[in-house]
Amino acid sequence: MPQEPTTYRTFWPYYLNEHRKPATRRLHFLGTGLGLALLALLALTGAWWLSVAALVSGYAFAWAGHFFVEKNRPATFRFPLWSLYSDFRMFALAVTGRLQAELRRYGVE
Image 1 (cartoon, rainbow, N blue to C red):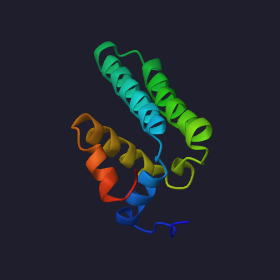
Image 2 (cartoon, rainbow, N blue to C red):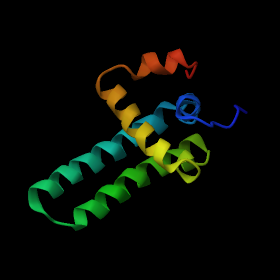
Image 3 (spheres, rainbow, N blue to C red):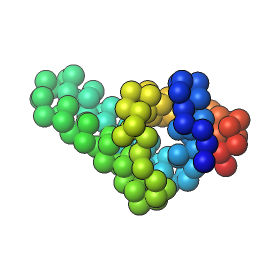
């Protein structure tokens, strides 16, 4: 088991390791993308309930990936802010086509 992260610099490789399976990363991507789309819709319509839907969709897809695919406990439970930031970082890397290189860099493949 990797050492417990104490800084964000050590957390990032830990986070990637907790997302080893492509299906888990795809579920994260789907939840984050849907959450961002709902937030954009909120900005356009002002419908407050979309903020709740965005939050639920983001976490529901991600946690489904952890519980049913990866079979591990989401890092959000112990590292909520680092996990949130890392989810957006992983999403941005996937959108820009750089996630696979980052996974290889940390030996997650």
